Image 1: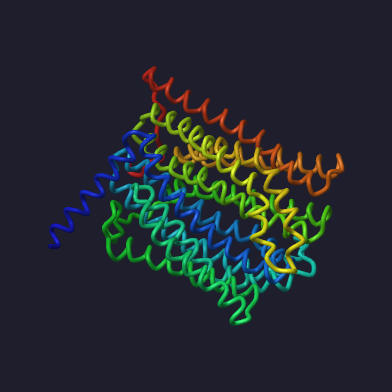
Image 2: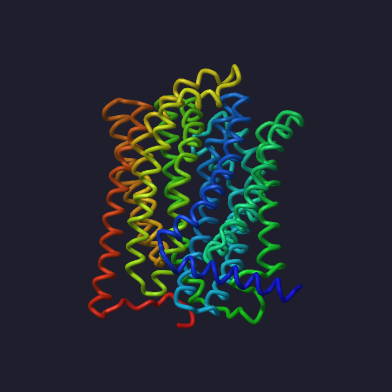
Amino acid sequence: MSSNNNQNSKGDIDKRISMITGDPKKAIRTLSVPMIVSMFLMMAYNLADSIWVAGLGPDALAAIGFITPLFMIAVGLGNGLGAGATSLIARCIGAKNKKGADNAAIHSIIITIGLSAILTVMILIFLPGILTAMGAGETVGLATQYGQVVFGGLVSLIFSSVASGILRAEGDVKRPMYAIAATAVLNIVLDPIFIYYFGWGVAGAAWATVLSSGIASGLMVYWLLLKRDTYVSFSRSDFTPSWKVIKDILAVGLPASAESFVMSTLGIVLNAMLVITGGTEAVAVYTAGWRIVMMAMIISIGIGTASITVAGAAYGAKNYKNLSVALNYSAKLGLMIAVITGAIMYIFANNIAGIFSYSSQSASMAPSIAAFLQTMYPFLIIVPVGISASSIFQGVGKGITALVLTIIRQVAFVLVFAYLFAFTLGLGTYGVWWGLVVGNICGGANAYFWANRYTKGLKRNYIKDKPLKIDTIPGK
């Protein structure tokens, strides 16, 4: 029986490897579906926090809004390190370097534990001061209650993201989906119990998040370290300490994490603009509406995340044609779907806004939330283009390039337009919203231009028998 199980396991592994190194269009579709489901589930339990907390009133919802940028920095670290692991392991798989893939996976876990522990301590120490500096004002107490619990359980959240990245690198996206499903269901069940039945308020929502995320981490530990039926292995003999491997992982992981930091910083600045133009209720509206927009973006993000694996495998194998196909196909597929999902959000904006206005304390926010959702329609259409471009650069190991493009989009475009529309033109809160839209349209188009130029350049050089040297494969 054990022999049959081993044979079945090897067959599954071989099938996954063939898939990520084969037709890039099929690979992107196959990989993206479970990722999209996983992200929907993840957003569902994040949305559950907002929906249940909205019943406590605008101040409680605004408190979560002030924590959200900090929380996204932490989530971004996990996603960034996961992207770094995915990129390097996929490149090793494409280059048929099994030992390099194993070593990269082990290094990823070690880096994760160290960095997440440091980040947890730093945030918990400085949280009240950070919130005060962000302009949380009278909501500092509520935001601190929520943040201390959430950031206290940060290690498990980051670990599950990196472990998912390791599995994605070898084409295994179903098990991360199962783990997130268990997490989402538990969080949704625990939220009303902790918030209202136990009377813990916003802290109850935080406890539900932390306890449910521990489930995902436990399942990942079992699959990777105990069951051991993955392409990569974690035995002591597979580990060779290497600063080069650490550098290769962080070359994608840190810039990808920094992208989230840039976006979170943008969120902090936008919150400050909203406080000036519309008070804490404007922040509450943005917090609620942005959760819906993020859900509408999930398909594009899932397609882009799948592209990291496909791009890494193609780059490792020097198959630059597949790399170019991955860029263009992911952008077109994401754009077509975004047109549909954005239209649905626009048409049913009033109905969606009602989810956050079920109590007397939050009923006044409904019209503004609906207006925000309708304003974001053009934003949703251009998002897939920028995501695809960043994913391709991350897949080939050029994390810094992806980061620079993000900074240009968020700082040079979004902030400038938001300030121009909100203050110079006097549009107030609506100006901040339109700054997001126009800035991302300009930034997304710019990112795609550079990614397309890069992939075409690789193909030209390879055709001329001048392939670029791949120096990010350990052991090569």
